[in-house]
Amino acid sequence: FQCDGQWMAHAHGLERVMPQDRVATVLSTVKAKGLDQHNIGTPTFMNRDGSAAANGSAEGMNQYETTDFFTSGCMNLAMTYMYEGMREEGLDVLYRCVENIVLRQRLSWDSPVLMDSENGRRTSGSDYTQIMTLWAVPAALKGQDSAGLCGEGGLVARVLAAANPRKPAAMSV
Image 1: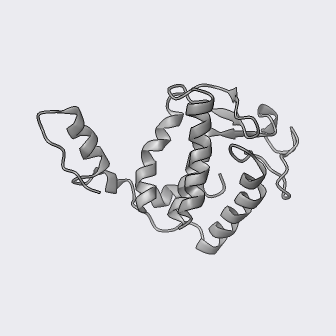
Image 2: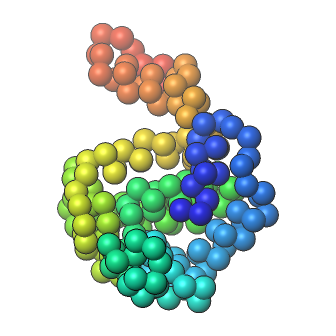
Image 3: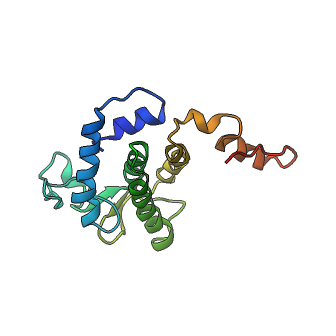
């Protein structure tokens, strides 16, 4: 969650809110200490060495298991990588998370709020709005803000046109 503010700025077409070099350092550290050491996502709370923080070692931590991560947070992290020029890393994070939710756990409509980063199982909650974060991914993949999805030929126009078969969709690549 350290870089969510930067992801939100990118997604809304705003100026940078964090220095680019600091974001790059955070993302490379999260990859090395979190993603490379866990199967599905990166734990919400970690120690500096990448190990999961012990229960109660962080404020509010006792509400979560030490290896838990938020599914929407994992998708936000993926998009932060994409916006920061680390497209392949972002796609890897996204793929791990969505593959686990949809293919392994079969939870595509009622996405878990929290999942275990080791075994991928739901540890808390069920919320269909969690998976809606995926709608922001096409913009991140193109390096656009969310307004780019709403323009002529954008994703929103294509979805609306597909819902109205009498009006042909304007296609863009």
